[in-house]
Every structure is written in C-alpha cells, then in structure tokens.
Amino acid sequence: MNNKQNRSYLYGVVGGYLLYLAYELFADRQDPNTTMMPVVRWLFVGLFTVAGIFLLIWATRLWLEARKGQDEEERPPENPNAMK
Image (cartoon, rainbow, N blue to C red; front, side, top):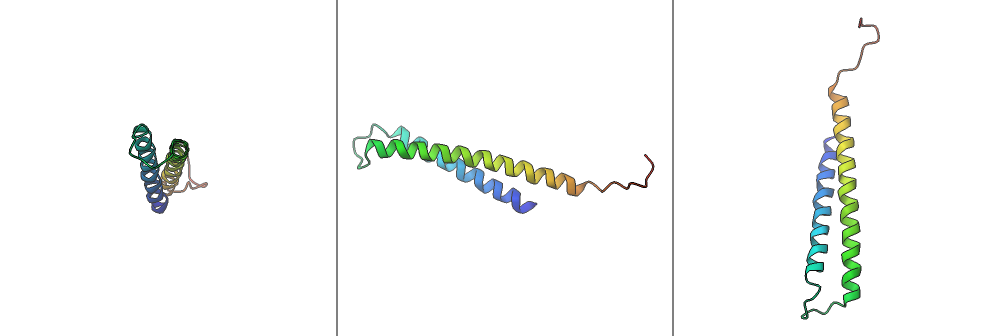
C-alpha cells in the first residue's frame, strides 16, 4: 500500500503546482509585455484550475484508500472459533 501513498503525494504536489501556475497566469493578466492572447490566458487559467482541483481531490481519495488498506493489513484477522 505504500506505493499508493507515494502516488497520492505526487498527485497532490502536481495538483498544487497546477493551481500555482493558474494563479501566476491570473496575477499577470494585465501585463502589457506578453505575447499571449487574453483568450488563451483565460483558457489555460481555467484548464489548470480544473486539473489542479481534480488532482487534489483524486490524491485525497487515493491517500484515504491506501490508509484504509494499511489499517486493515495491520489488524489481525478474526478467528471465528474464538470466544467473544
């Protein structure tokens, strides 16, 4: 399960970086020294924002799934013949 946890961390970092890129593009939207058209800038801001949020949600779900599987592995199996 450690592989899923590592992958979830990577997805979280990539999602955060995409949100950072979207913020940087949005913050520099009034910069006159650019060759990027405003429509393209807004398109990429939207694309990076949606992809970043999706990756953060996906990373959280993957991390919770790996955590749940790890907890189940650590717990010893129940013996049906044991007295309760």
